[in-house]
Image 1 (cartoon, rainbow, N blue to C red):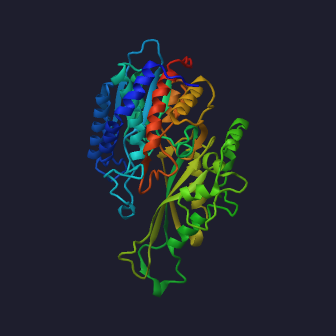
Image 2: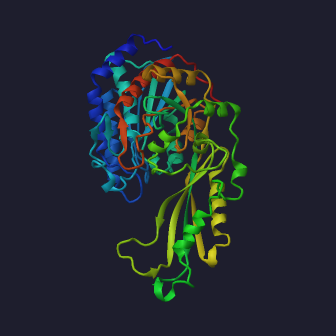
Image 3: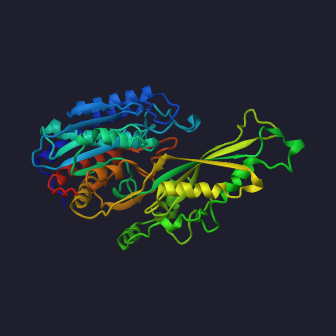
Length: 474
């Protein structure tokens, strides 16, 4: 059981009195369209970085810097290192956001944060500006109430997480010396349910391939030529559909030889989690009457966290506007393959390339492009030991409910490299998202009640970790 000492109580009191101020800061940050994807203005990301740095300075964080490397979206660093003898926590988040998506699907403009029914709607409100602000608010609540944090803290806030952290290696090489820490706390994962906290101990990886099918050297009249002349759009669709077998498994020879079998402990953790299929379908926004997909013989949580999956994230042929009765010359798609322990992402992309290019229908020209920058590795850890026990206690104190131990189907490139750099420092992955938050989609939102609980949990966490002896670095 977590017992709040005087400084913890003072910090909690300050948080409660100044919650409105922290929410106002979150709203201002979420107004900045800091999209890191290609084709969006980098100036917005610079504004996002500067505004985030200001929030750190206002909180009392010291040595705040916007770290810029040529060709890389800006990072932010800050620290407070006045707890001699106490461990150091590296707090990670990101300030870049996903593209806004389809404007007509938003109930309110994506970069005009709007509160409705206890939720704050807007791009980046949940992923990940609220995660960043949860720790900014927790540190501020300590410094503004008692003048000190129970442990030393360092902030690293990334500007390219949403595009796979492709320049993370360059960043680490340049700034490794200033990032030493005993624990890593990451704010970019989800809770098990609204009001139910979670620690994430496994992340899927990702690799991405672009496939183009070309059948003609220019478009031709579909009436004059349709029938005997193959349609590249249909060929592409057939290739993609053929990647999934009737039993839901992926038809990529050699892929499953690399898939690790979950340990007995992990299997037990998965079995301990409650599952409501109707609720799951509703939260996933599935249409009425649809059934779940994926490999037969595996539970939903196994499919989400321990099995590979394939998604078509882009498809290009001919737009409706301007279309005519033609067989077009070529069609393209971007495929996203989620990887799991022990799949090598580059090898998986190579296997997928071979599968798509081998004996294409009608002898069409199939070109598959892969890139190492489009590969993010999976990550896993054993969530046992004092640091994880401290995390569970802190989350229970903040939420009033036991902490679920979960995996995540998404990818975060930061975790593995930083954990390795810090000699295997324990990584506590906690966040502010709930199943209804619509991260990466239209109408992304933050549950404000859970956000307050996350901020309280962070206050408890710093106190809990201050009493944990750091693991010796290898």
